[in-house]
Length: 455
Length: 158
Image (cartoon, rainbow over all chains, first blue to last red; front, side):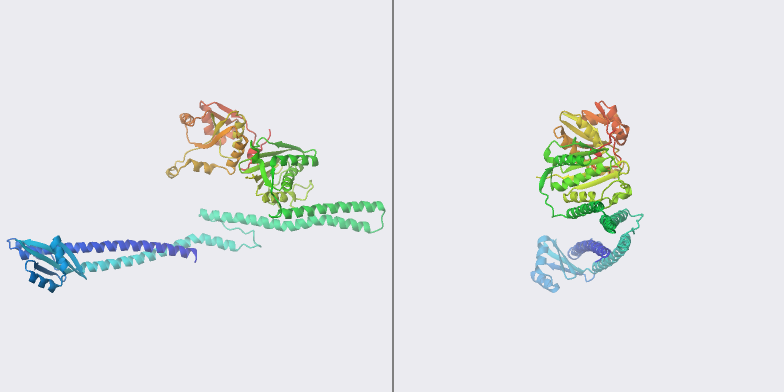
């Protein structure tokens, strides 16, 4: 079922139940009140009648007058006077008017009683006049209030239906109004396919919730588009990277074979071919590693290692490779408890990841100082590597994790553009986070946080 | 035990003042991180005002974890760290605040730019009778993403 219909049904049902309860409540209490009211009226008549029939007094005329003037005739009104002292007659009258025995008993005991048979109401009083016991019973049908009750019931029923219809009508328009921006977004999203990833959904101007929804959608589209692009880039980059050494190998071989040459030239060209083949080998190895670290499960990561030791080892290696680099280890924030530096993982991979980052920092900063800072919170070990190198241009930053992608300002530096993706994969594999912030010509800060071994 | 007031704006960067502060301590201390701000004028806001919620809104991501780095580092010096918001204006109000919280010392940044976000609180601190220590802070590396640990862990060397 569609959401608007469900909302309409739910709310209408709720309103219907509420109004039904309200109407039922009113009807029930009016109905109850009607009984008491009518019984009271009958009782007054009974008292008046008792006075008229049984008392011999001068004031009787006045009472008679009042009765005629103010008490209108009720439908089917009957007045029965039963003399309790005359048993036979009492029994006869009782049977004639079909009055139950226990009703008279009740009147005798309680002085007054009420009783209802079908639509006829009976009200009886016990009247004692000069030591004579009488029971006066007035009965009548309650047509007027019966009619009123029916009218009330119909009225309540009609108003219930009208208001429910009214509410359903309002809800219909309301839900349409609410769903309209959503529908617009749905229509917008439907237009987006793999061919039209550049399309963006129009932002609504008035509705804040909808605007944040569209923003989220558009952000997601941005990310999707970037990753789509990098997928496309990867293939072209990879084939280019693998092709370059192959082309030079083929070219070198063709040129050498074109005519007979001296042994010296052959040696030289074979040397070149070997160099190029080694390059190719390194690249495919790196690619293989990238593929291996790309998914979980293949790599054993059960050894527990201390990050500070790892960082010191990395520093030693990088200094060997780049003797002129200045690496400044800052251990000022190391925790007092060395347990907080222990990380569970694969030592070779983490070593590779960190050395990749530190080597990049050294390579692109032209022997300026590289800060390596280590710290630990209660959950993570955090390693920050900051250089003052060439930085990454802003437009290249979304792509730095793509294999073979190299930023536009790295022409003067050798590299394949495969280190950072490997590092990212390794950090991901260890459930860590890698954040890179950078500004061109100012420097780059790489932040790696890895969860602390908890047991 | 000393209780030290350190102004903060709940950004990771502002913790470098705390870092400098703790580095100068030799005995166990309590720290109160305080942000001075106006109380909302709106009745509804006041009705549903809770201090913790206000602080939660101001907290930069990673602030608490960065605080934990410092706690970890100085585990033997830091006895406890609590965070608070100060809404007062007058000097007397601040004196009351100090007495109520039993604050004994205050550390404030030396340079103007680091004071900007908490200027009213810092001027109250300077006018009060508290022993105040002004600390020079290292310069911020602007390009680093706000809320990253690097804001606390690295800085520009002058």
